[in-house]
Image 1 (cartoon, rainbow, N blue to C red):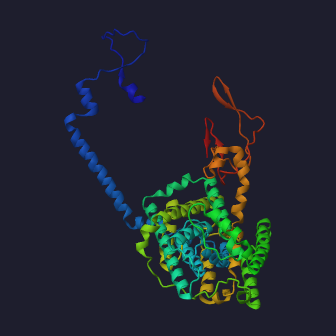
Image 2: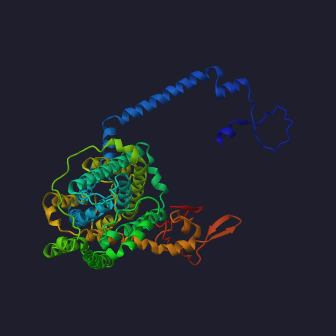
Image 3: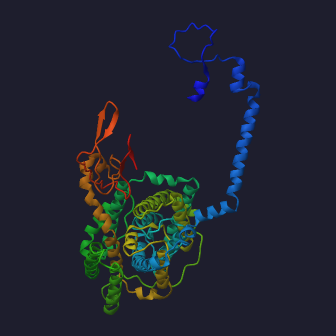
Length: 546
């Protein structure tokens, strides 16, 4: 404004003005050729000025790149790619070490039976679930930014991978396979599952190279809940043959859920009474223990490890009663000790599994990013969504060399880690130590473990996902169209903070908006899009989202 006013002049005493204007008005001086060249320069000199500006821009970019490639720039890059270098120097050893140790050991104890159980969902031998509970956890501890995130086997991914493995390597129609033929079939299925882990890891690394971590911004909580709730229903139906002792092949393709239900109802008279009894007793123990852990989480020093107690009791009962030989109860069998030899997956299978690896990669990123964001908001720290892509991509890619199937963050063990007092990623090292002891020394103790117990662990671990369906009536009241779609988030207002907040009322007058203090208007929290630390705030001149 001052420049414009300075460019205006008043007519001199001897100048005539034919414009009728008020007294004291100022006018802009005429724009002559000399004035134009003074303000904008000569047109012939414009290419030289552009060349100089481009040269200066290139110099600035070169200096920026040089600073990035310098010693401090390399250190900043190393800090961004190895998060332990940032949080480990500030680690509170006296305050956090005990909590991380207790939480890590607790999660590791749960990883052992849960990993073997989810391996059955993937259609591979149980020991490969232990491998998947070890290598990905170790890699994420070094690369992940979620301090309270627990990675490993996840039921949704195991179910998706198992469906693809059954389609790529189907079991012969006869079903009566010899020991050697069974080993060959298992080896082919393990190779297919490892190839899917390799493919999904490569896709996530490609997403990291393209900096697609911003996609986590568009993840809606109803979408994730609809996905996990639907997967929980599929897991329940797929485990019915193991609960009832029915040797039925897995149904694949469209309407596999209804095909499995029809096959189970048809073969129900041939159920194994011994395995049915084991399943009923296991569920009768696991479900109440999980309910106690949830209701008394504030009073219990550490959650009750119901899974490992059930595994020990069932193994001792099967060994002492010879259930495997007398009543034909299916058991886990011998768990080979040590680690498998690193082997590159069959790259010739990659074109066949790309279509299956893409949804696995997207679900891995969606679930992991959502869980990490929830606990980051709750405990007031930030995560890097692109670094999460790198962590899970490298985790799946490297673990596939050790015959692991796709893995991600898990809902049950993450909640267990937080409830047990975990504070940082260091808890993952204690979890790896527990799984390592089982792989090296304690594997033979699980020889007589009935597979029906693993199926019960699969179903009981879906408890939290089943309870998410209680929100469906409220979703129906908000948007019936989105309820029918079952997975598209409803059109809800932005999230409101957890506690009801009074909103001041705006009173309009001739001088603009004025704020007064009437009785507060309380708005209840939103159960669908609520996040810790978010809410509405008021600016003196506008309503803005904080």
